[in-house]
Image (cartoon, rainbow, N blue to C red):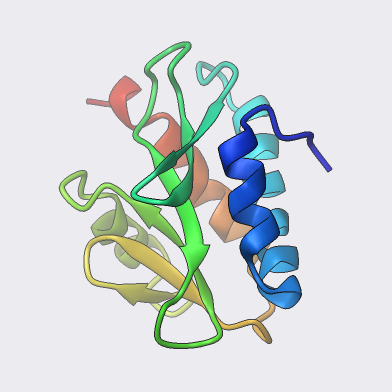
Length: 134
């Protein structure tokens, strides 16, 4: 597991229930792995935005912020994208039946879900390179 460079982010993860924390750590690892394997992204920085663990392309400014958090109304969790970026609409076109979406801002998962890693990695890569394509 990648070490936390930000104490506030580490504390946020520690506060999650164990089952949610495990899934969010898997999602966090996928974000970092995707960034490392995607040309033009550079190193990610990690912070809390709106109380949610967030990943920013501050070094290169190549993409939009990606956030992760548990769902408030269920036992699930989500990965969030800037609602005005158009990214979730693009994901819906690419993967209409692969994910469950929340409006223009999130891909939702239940704890029991098998995450389609290849498709999700593609979506994360698109978010982390969003500004390079504009």
